[in-house]
Image (spheres, rainbow, N blue to C red):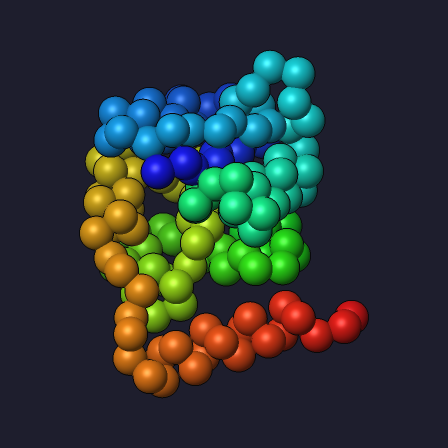
Length: 149
């Protein structure tokens, strides 16, 4: 799977994220502080990663900043993106299942190596729910994206 990854800082957990995704067989498209010469501002690099998902250049993205909040906010401004800030595996699993999240947002401050692996395991093991109510909610979010601003 092609996964866009962004980070506003070149932190050990961000480098570990890239390595872990590659080890799992994913093609990583790096943004921000993870790519030489790229703009590392959290709003800019998170948008770049999210836009690749929205445009189909990547199937999913992982966006990172110190708290994960700014990265998730910026990613969610891109129509077609459903970014979820996940601090644990249960939240990651639920975000994929019930919200059909296509962008994972992580905190560089809070995410340890063992926690990162647990979150990624849960994220990739979960599939979007086919429950009618869950699909209606996701469809409503998609309608919100399509409304004029």
